[in-house]
Length: 211
Image (tube, rainbow, N blue to C red; front, side, top):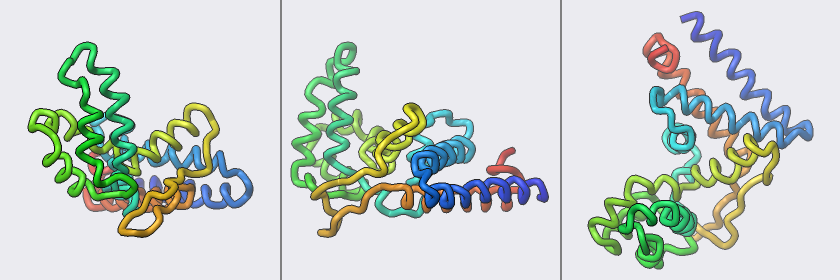
C-alpha cells in the first residue's frame, strides 16, 4: 500500500502545482498539463480501452463532479453528426441526410443544454428506429466534456496554444446562462478524477484497480 500512497502523493502535488502555475501567468502551460493529466488518468482508469477521446470524456462525465460537463449541447451534436456523415456516406449510403434528420429531431432543444436522457427521448421520437440506432452510440460527442476535449485538449496538446476557455453565448440550462469551460472547471474536475483513482487503488490494493 505504501507505493500507492507515494504514487498519488507525487501526482497530487503535480495537480496542486497547476493552480500555482496558472496564477503565476503561465495559463497556457497550466491548461496543457491539466488536459494531459485528465487524459492520462482516463487511459489508466479505463484500461484496456485505448480510445483517448472517449476515455477523456468518460472520466470527466463519470468522475469529474462538474455537472455541466455531463450535459449535451444539441447544436454541437448536430455539427459533429454533419462532419461524421460526410466521412461515412461514401461507403455507407444510409448515413446520407442523417445530420438533417438529427437537426430536425432536436429543433425544440436548440439554444439550451439538456441531459442525455432528454436528448435520447427527443431523438427516439424524431428519428426512425434505424437512424436512432446509428446515432445513439455517438451521443457522447455532443457533451460539454467532448467540447472540452475538442476545443481545449486537442488545441493545447497538439498545437501548444488555444483559447482560455469555451463560451456558449446565449445558450442556457434551466433558464440560466451556461458557464464557461475554463481552467478552473477542468482543474476542479481533475482533482475529482484523481480522488476517484486513488479510491479505487486503495480499495483494491492495486494501482487503478489492476496495476
